[in-house]
Image (tube, rainbow, N blue to C red; front, side, top):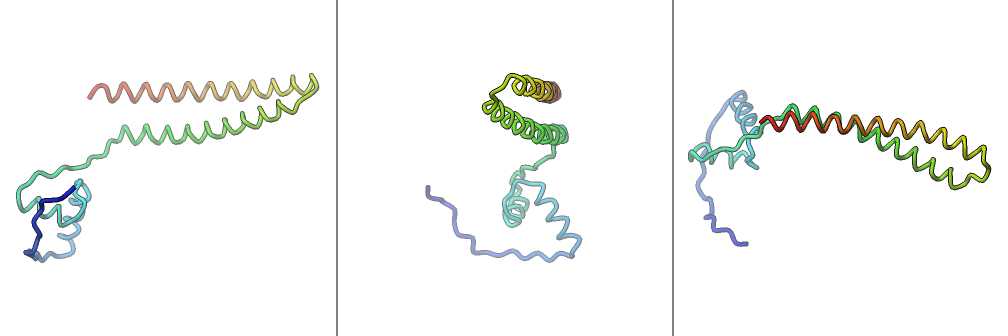
Length: 130
């Protein structure tokens, strides 16, 4: 894909103190412009600037989901070990004990799945209002 942009050969020098430059950088970070030059060029030429905004409800949702993901990884690791152990069992008392232990993990897994479902439903309700 070929670009039809002309070469930029002219310079614009702007002097700023430290506070002004920090303010400019902060505004640039809030935009989707990839460079400070692009941001300044858009401002000077009166072109629109697209700003990023922080969605706190999404942050809360993601924090909860990451925590649940870690717990699910732990549970799935335990389940994998339990299945391996079940494959090595040969006697009825060992199998019965395995079933009891596995039932506890199954209960924890079901509880985590319900929590995930609830969080997803809350997020959907929150976002569908917008």
